[in-house]
Length: 293
Image 1 (tube, helix red, strand yellow):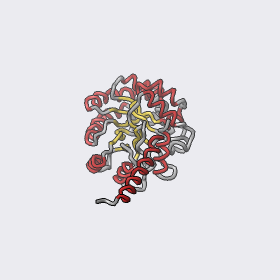
Image 2 (cartoon, one colour):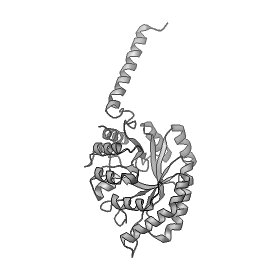
Image 3 (cartoon, one colour):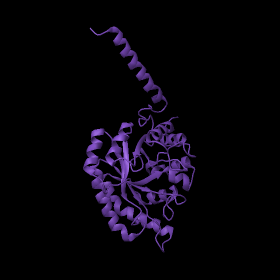
């Protein structure tokens, strides 16, 4: 028969462990699994976290912190079979990746044929990785073109690619940037022109990658703009400003902003496209604290 003293000790230890887990979860997330948050589902950007580690190891590290998803930039140059197999093994998802970057510019009609082919190929990759969203970028300023002309070219390019995205059930998420800090010379910044572009395209599969770091720098009033353009929101990314680090290191009150997203009805992933200020664990714990309200 089992030793009754040993049994009582084990029961007490298990109870203490459960209580330790329940306390942090009630207020946000367990300290050892900060990625398991009560309201918001976060996706770690593994281009910016654990940059000194091999790519596949970064996926394992994200999963080890309890995060349900990751995101990354271009799919080219990555072992897609290994990525797909590892994510399936770990039970983690790919929230989004980049299908079309800054150059050549989507804002130049000379590139639209290549853009459409890139979207077609990106959809094949998305299916392979069981991913439903791909970022596309508007492009840097084109010599001799006004901003209005460049935005119109973006609309036309997206209209050409939208039927492919709709057929493949993969959403194209257009990302407006900021030009004050990170992307001087980029043609699309702020949420208002991005909302106008996506409304003009008029597709259920062409929406906005709403990076709140860029939007804070470009326009502020994050909650107000989110409410105004929520019908065109497809995906969200965050980082604090200044510094592009985790919540709590800058001026953005992310508890309020994430609550606004939740109350508006957003239940998709929120990408952590940020550089941890000290360690990835500390950044993950700060992210968990931002999900408390």
